[in-house]
Length: 259
View 1: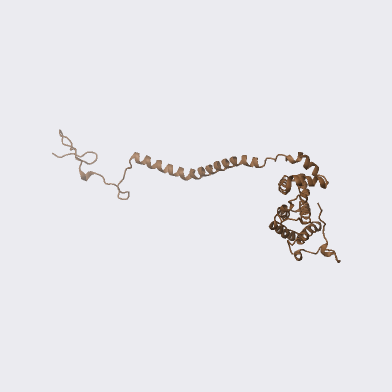
View 2: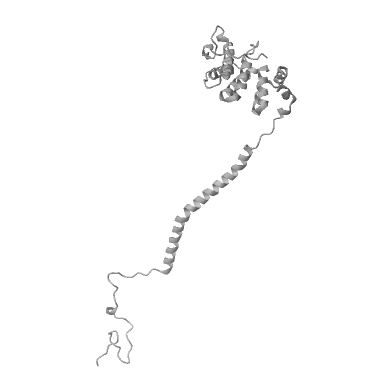
């Protein structure tokens, strides 16, 4: 009996029998040669790959933003930490107790006796410390320094201040230097010979500054010449361009106050 064929062209199973459970190998369709054999990816592996990709993108995009945020936080923290120190440094200084001291108030005038009393009480060290107060206290201290018994100790500090000063603040410093340098020699050993020589060199340098007013240069020249008389500087190094023409040119200049 001739077997019939089904819709797919396969032979039909004989009547009353079972179809074979094993498919015929020759009837399995092969994949298209261009595409190759299809490979299926497990769903779990695909999700893991996507998660890794998303995390990598987030790290690339958000990483610089996080760094900038940390820098901003650290900068703001540092500024907030330094602000108390800045406010403390900018705090106004309390008024000096010397402003209410009777000795300082009396010495602020032109009475040389009161200046001498203040100089005897404070000494050169105390008067130099008072320069930090500034204002009227500093002017009073400069006026009293030539009257101090140990005023030679103030020559070098005053000369350094004079070299750094400018404008009107230089004049009282030069006047104090001239007052100390022009004092008569004391019958004792010099208290600070090295400081006196350094002050003499500074005064020579100041006297040669052509940009200073003539009045200030005259003070520096006179103080340098007073120290030259004590052998602390060569008088030939002192400028003489401000000296008037005449026989007394070598002694021209401002006169030192005599305590």
